[in-house]
Length: 275
Length: 354
Image 1 (cartoon, rainbow over the protein chains, first blue to last red):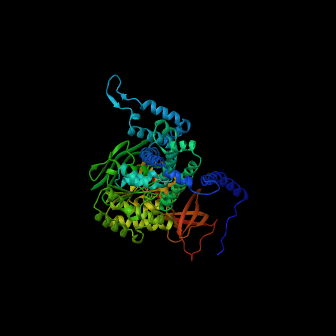
Image 2: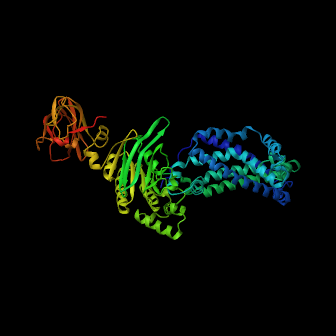
Image 3: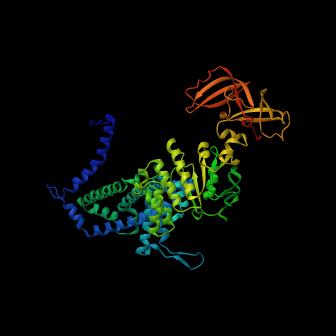
């Protein structure tokens, strides 16, 4: 059998090559640097030191938990919102898209000061002493709620767009009507029909959220939580090789997550809505 | 006894009425088609029965219960869509069992019913396939099985064959009709394809601009159209302006050429202007058999349509189409020939004024 390959123009190769160089050179430089901790020797000492640090395990685990909480809370908030806008309120899409872009305009430092300003004092019913909620920043649990809420805002542009794009590939209206005619209520429709069919979009949004949360420094620093972002930042100020090693590990984790997305969505999920 | 009743149903969107004062009684087990061009309100009416649209006014009763304001998931109504609307994340079996599982029926009962439905649509070998692994026709059969699995009181079909190719469309419509008859289920079928409606229905509701033009059996709709729209929309038709010349003898003049009709003319007077209609297949060459109307004509054009040959003739100043069965052993006239054509007095219809 004769295999025919489409001839790819020179300029395509050139731009592709430049892109590869742009992305790979810094990464390879980081890898090379992280392996050079011992003089005149290539080794994994920086990785060993980084992993041995108790704070690494603690902050990394904590940030991962925060990321999972943020992803779950974002799905609960954004999927029904995007679904309802697509189904019943298409005229509201522009407003929602504008709101989802705000985190790009409002810096995280403003967000965190706003959160601290509002939630560091208790809220009472005006002219009474009836307390609606106590200062959230005073407790570990309250601070966790605040930081997850803040991360939800930061991740919103990515999560909303992923979910909205996912819903665009599915005939949401017809599937909803089909499910309704079979007796399904809204909860059943979202959980059993919509969510499984936007699985790949959800995973993309979740991955981006994960990357944002794990590397985030400002919210975590100002809210005073021991997250991975501030840890990496501090480590970078005192050490040279270990931050490079951890940065490379973070890249690998990201790629692993992308691989998982391919693995989970390479099958029938890709054909959602096709007919 | 009437099973599904739509009483004075109207649906208004902004300033215009999509459906206006729609009335229909459907018997249990009846197969009714809504036929009309795009935008005539047929799908909106169907969606009101399904509960996806709420009527602006009027009531819908099903099995004696008023369901006008019920949510779609609270009406026991099965729906089939043009785009199949199978759940892409579920296999054929899971799709069919979805409604039963939503109702929380016991798993053994669900499996039994799913098996029964899969046998009904002859897709036993495809039970574990996903929708994307099936052809369009197979997907629509699964959609039919899924809708029937819940034992709905009414089956609603919204142009279910439009996305399929011609051959599958014909075979699937026969299958749908056979299954509907076997189960004795009441069905409403929306289509803009007159052949589809004529071949499948017990009764047809012809709609135009949100209103019912005519309700009748396929035979009545085709042979005795009441309005110009029905006459034109259902089947090919010759229409012409005519003047009543003798009401007692049923005589009409089309551009000076005399026609005789069997239509009742008690409400007409000599000199009244009317619109007459003649189906092309009711006209034939006068050489074969002479009927009440024998008309001199000139052959204007001949179009070969396969089983039928359409011949355009000019009678006086008016052009008419005549359909004759293709017979390879009979010689057709030539363009420009003069000849005589004929039709019975029953073939000359007088249409209701608009």
